[in-house]
Length: 423
Image (tube, rainbow, N blue to C red; front, side):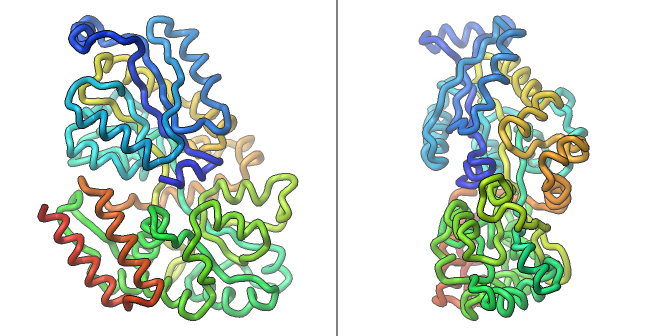
C-alpha cells in the first residue's frame, strides 16, 4: 500500500475507534440505545495536516460523537497487520470504521470483518463510477470510496518538443521514443515500480489489463491469467528490461525511488501516481515547466490503469454503527471532498470536482486523472488478495530478471493462483 502514502505524500489509512476504556460488555449495552457515540479516528500519517481541520468541523456540529485523531504506524503493512489482528479477535475490538486500501475490501468482507452498508445512505451516484466497484463484494456494498487514484505517464515535454514528437499513446510509440530519444539526451527510457512489492503487482496488472487480459474473475474464484493478452502485457515489460530501454535499476524502484530518478533528470518517461507529477511541476522543482502527463499507453491506444485509493468500512462488531455511517457520509460529502483535494492533495471520488474550473486551474492534471480513473480497473478481487499479490510479484519479478520467459511466467502464475483458490 505504498501508493497510499505516495499519492500527495501519503494517502491516509484511517481507522475510527471508540474512545474510553470500558469493558466490552458495557460497550455492547450501548449499541442498541442509539448506535451513536464518541469516535477515535486513527491515521497512518496525515502528512499534509489536512485532516485535523476537517475533524474540527465534525466535532463542532456533533458534540456527542466527537472524533479524536490517533495515528497508526506509517507502514502500510504494519497498519494492515494491526487491523487484521484486531478484527480477527471476533469481539468489538478497537476499530469502528476503517479506511482500507481498495484491494482489502474483498478480503475483509469475505472474512466477515466488515458489515454491509446501505447503498441509499451514501451519494454513490455522485462518485466516479469505477470507484464504486472497489467497495463491493459478492454484489453488496461493504465500504464507501473515500479517495481514488490512477497511474499516469509522466514525460519530459521539453525534450519531446525539441524532438518534434507528441507524447506516446501506444506501447510501440513509448518503446520507440525510449530506445531512440532517451539515449540522445543521456536519459533512461522508461520506468515504473518494479521492485517485488505491491507496486509491481500494480504495474503488472496494468500491463495485462492494457493488453485486454485479466488475472482473476468471479471474485477470485476463477483464474483467467493464462491468456495471450497476459503474455503480451508481461512480455512488453520483459522486453523493455532485456533491450535496455527500461533501465535495470528500475527493478529496485518503488514510488519514491522512481519519482526521484525522474526529478534527477535520469528518465524520459515514468509511470507513477499523480503526486509525482505534482512534485515534478511544483515551484522549486528542477523540472518545473518541463513535465507533461498523459494516460498510460496500451498496445493500440491509451491503456488501462489500476485503481488506487482507499475505502471507508465499518467493523462488523462496531458499537456505534450509526455514528460510523454518519462520519463516512460526512467525509464523502462534496464540501469535505473538496478539502480532501485542496488541503490534502488527495484525489477525491466526487466526479464534479474534476470539472470544477477553479480546481482544474490549481490542479491541471485533474482532467487526465479523471480520464484514467474512468477507464481504470481494480486489482484482482480475492478473499486472499495478499497471497495473490505475493504470487504476482514473485513470478513477474522472475520474468523481469530473465529467470522466466513471459510464456512460462504466465503458466506458472496460473498454477499458483489456482492452488490459492482451492485452499
